[in-house]
Length: 436
Ligand code: CMC
Image 1 (tube, helix red, strand yellow):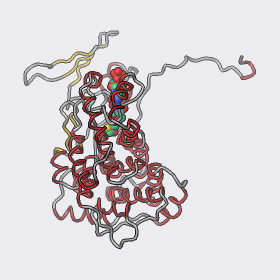
Image 2 (image 1 turned 90 degrees about the horizontal axis):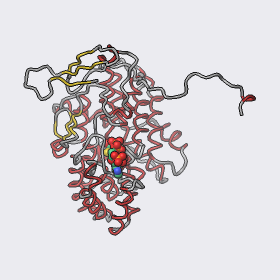
Image 3 (image 1 turned 90 degrees about the vertical axis):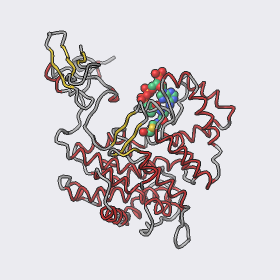
Image 4 (image 1 turned 180 degrees about the horizontal axis):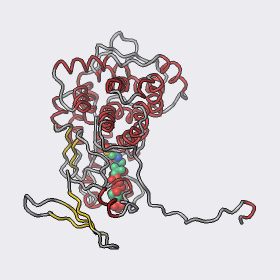
């Protein structure tokens, strides 16, 4: 039995839970600290009783000072700064510095950071010539990304030395810098175009657009509205606390794997349609719906459990995702340049119908970041296969920040959850000749 003390009481009353083992009458008082109670108390009562929490709905696996998320009130902050302020006034590279280092950079720090990231964008020729060329001609670019980012560990064997802070930071810079290069190469390969090398005179987003789209022109000039929109999308995707891919990064990192291998694991998690693949799934869903009159039957199918409304719902946000609000405004600016994405009308109507429907209201399902981001990417010319890759580029900043935080946290050990065994009890082995 668990009862809360201090709930609803005045200031000064110690907040705690008292946990009573009704089998023995033994009890333990656990302080509520930073909104959590330590599982150590349960171990004191009985080390063989575990908290059963599939998918970690109620489990905090670490203390973190990177991202604050209040899902009920739609609040998201990186290192204390509201996401709206960062999206409007900052740049992705500055936000990446903030997330990794904990503070906004001084001018000199930012110049050095920008220089370091810019000059680590190249990848070893063997990555391009031997490794990438080995993929099947129509390989999914996210599959290529997962494999190539993992392969980077073989090009930088020093990365295994995770105890050295300088070595660690060098890999952090390499990862943030090389992701756009690998991402663009993956795209160019999958459509049979020659690779375009990084242009160190361009900013982060424009350089990526150049590697994606440049054909024969001496210098690729990206539309400033589109480059800024992409940079803003990168800011919005830079971190999101203990999401599935960040958890993968932390779990693999907790075994002291090198950061390239850990990032490959994070990328693999992001590949899944319930996580980073969701915006790809949104565009496919909207394309399948096809016209306004098909929306009602689609929503009915969702309510019957025959389909899922992709881009809706979130494990943490139980109100409008603040990133979705910003993205909706970005979409307007992008469409002024690219022309309106015809799927937008279907998306707007679908959102309107869903937000007024009891099924979605009662389950507190609102549009998440992916509902509109795919439409922007599509309008900018990115194929849907590239959507999760576009997510991975900026999320790398979050992954490496969590990896650094994990390694510096004396409370962390190798991740190793327990289980509730529900299989057969001990039974004798029967040789195959004696089995029916
Ligand atoms: N469409 C229809 N029903 C839904 C949806 C949806 N998109 N999302 C949740 N539900 C229902 C679900 O069936 C369940 O209903 P019931 O109580 O009757 O069984 C209820 O709402 C609670 O859902 P849940 O599956 O327990 O929620 P979860 O926290 O496990 O899942 C989610 C979160 C994001 C995986 C889920 O909402 C989903 O699959 N959404 C669509 C995919 C998507 O857009 N993913 C992107 C997430 S945002 C990017 C990121 O941060 O990774």
